[in-house]
Amino acid sequence: MTIERRAFIKQATLAAAAVTAALATPTPTIARPAENKQTFAKPSPRGNPIGVSTYSFWQFRGQRLEIETCIEKAAEMGFDGVEILHRQMKDWENLSNSYLQNLKRLASSLGLDLMGFSTHQSFLNPDPDFRKKNVEMTIRQIELAYAMGIPTMRINTGSWGTSGSFDKLMENKGIEPPLEGHTEEEGFGWVIASIEKLLPKAQECGVVLGLENHWGLGRTPKGVKRIVDAVNSPWLRMTLDTGNFLEEPYDRLEIMLPQTALIHAKTYYGGGRWYELDIPYAKVAQWTRKHKYRGYISLEFEGNEDAETAVPKSLAMLRKHFG
Image (cartoon, rainbow, N blue to C red; front, side):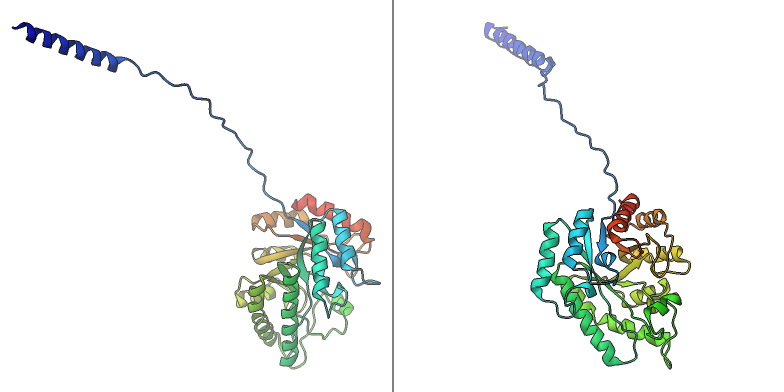
C-alpha cells in the first residue's frame, strides 16, 4: 500500500469518527420562560334585567304622573329599564318627536333602557272600519316605539265590550259573552287578520309585538297561542302577564314562556285593587331558566300601598328570584 493511500484512509477514518461523535452528542436544550396559564372561574348564568312600567307609579289613579318623573324615580330606585304606558304620556294622541326624543335622552342619561311600550287597541269588533282604524293606530304606535328605540310593544286582542265597565269585567274574572249575533270563532279571524297587517311595519322598525294574556280572546293561553301560531312570525310573540290568569294561573304561565318576548310581573302590596294573587315567583323564575328566557321582567305594581314604598319592595323581591 502506498504512503498516499494509507494517508487517505487515515483521514477518512478520522472524519467518520468525528461525524459519529457529533451525532452522539445531545443537543443542548434552550430554556424557555414558563407559560403564564391563567384560569378563569366559570361565569354564573346571567339573571334577567328588571324594569318597571310607568303604570306602577300611577295606575290610572288621580292626576296623571309625567313619564319623565317615572323615569327619574326608576333610576333612583335602581331599575335597569322602563316600560312606558302609552296612555300615560302627555298628549298621548298627538305626540311630538321632540317629546319622544327627550324621553330617550333622559333615560340614557340615567343609565336606563326604554325597553317596553304598553299600548291599547281592539280588533275584536265586527265593523271593518273600526278594525281598520285600530290597525292604523297600532302602526302609528309601532313608529312611536321605533322613535324611542324601544324593541318590544304590548298589544291586545281587545274585549267584546259587553261587560259595561272594566270593574264589571274584573268582577266576572275577565269572562264576557260575544256581541249578539257573533261568535268567538269570528273574533279569532278578525284579530288574526288585523295583526297580520301590522307585521310589515313591525319588521321595518324592528319592534317585536307581544300579544298579552289580557282579557278578550287573550284570556287563556290557548287563545293567545292560537293567534300567535296562526300569524307565525318572529315579529309577533307574547307578553306574559303573571297576574292576568285568574283561574289555574300558574300552570298556564309556563305554557306561554317559550314564545314570550316580555314578562309583566304583578305585585299587590297593600292588597290588590281588583283582586290579589299569591304568585310563586321562585317557581316562575325556575320556569324562565328552564325555557332560557333572558329578557326583561317588567314590574306592574297593582296594589294599594304607596308606590314610593311598594315599588322598591317589589324590585328587591324580583331581584332575589330573577337576578
